[in-house]
Image 1 (spheres, rainbow, N blue to C red):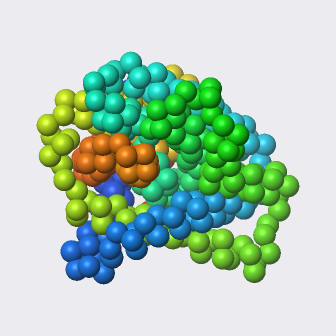
Image 2 (image 1 turned 180 degrees about the horizontal axis):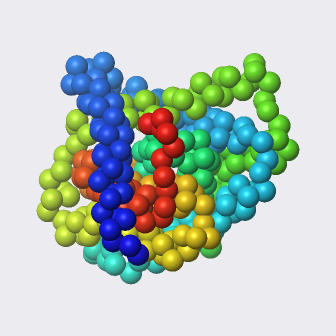
Length: 332
């Protein structure tokens, strides 16, 4: 690696990424104000989350696949899926090995917090701002893998059951989730270069545009009411946060770096961006659903989100410099 090139490129990339992260945090501030002024309450936010997960996510994926078929893009898409799948399996193994807190309710939360990033709510907006539609095209693959893993291993971990003993209804949930539905609808359109008629395509595009503002409002709302005490008193929480924000994305970058000449730079940077996102909001939702350590889950989501304003720009800028991504003129 040419260190002189890295020194030249990195400051510009860092400023670019920091600006985009700052935009997201400005939107979060609006969500925080909405909580303080009671423009939003818990019931309203739960409704927004349901819309985001069940409507906006599939619409976003379908919209990303509204493009002409390109064999090279399909090959890169398959590569991205393989990398994201292998990365999640490695994280699951690491979380199972390292997170051994005696309290089962807390242990479950720490394991999920280590594995699952906010790849949809924070990753996708950054991928769109930094890498354009191609970045989102590859970023949604990470979201699909996230959904499959969350509704299989994550579900079983929180519920306290053996994944091999899932019932038919639970297996159906693993296979039919917002990510897989979006892929099932969008991928055939891409393969056939089929464009939706305007009466359908425009609403899908409008719904996909809701991902960034609504997600940031929700995160900001929860940040304003977060209690960080349980996190600050837990050694396991510090370890989970370190792995989620720094160790894992840097290890993924280290694994991709030797392959950089064979990989699409946009795809590789999009994967690192998704990997560098803070703890997924879904961890808190699952903790509440299965009556686990909710305070720890909310604290981890909120705490890592706050820390990500420093860690994400550094990690993503490093990835852009090392993996050879050059922003196009006028981007961002």
